[in-house]
Length: 160
Image (cartoon, rainbow, N blue to C red; front, side):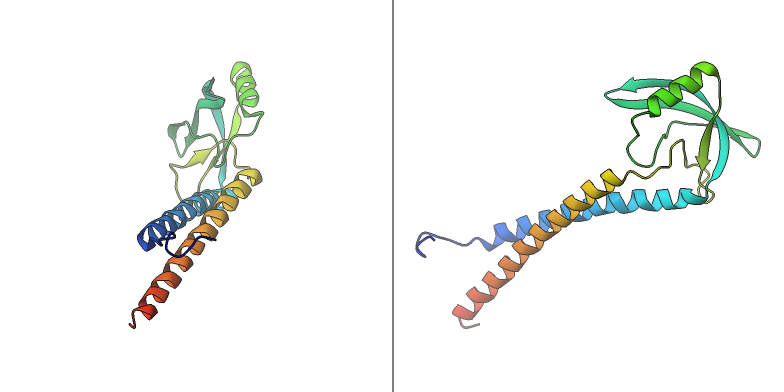
């Protein structure tokens, strides 16, 4: 493709790029892993009635505050979902608040400070984040393989 005199290999740049892509892959997969872990823990959650105190729209997402009672303590929380919210969450919470109807709150048995109103899985979010993790990891491995092959080739040309 390029004459050997023009093309210059920069192993440090390739090593840095490979490492950055692998770090991005770890970040994407850790987000999916953490949220999946939380969702699995909520599979056997304590279901409690919760009263919606406030609900509003903010930048295309729902912001809400709710209150529930557990073992005589009144707890206020604002965590709505494990994954991204569903399309009808705002409407459900708004109608529950205006009518005074309680909604179901899911309380983690192992972490009583963690509660959500919607524990449904968002497969789309898992697929997108997982795809990015795989793609970044693949590119990172390609960069690192290229780096180590080139370093090995340079070392064998030098006789060491």
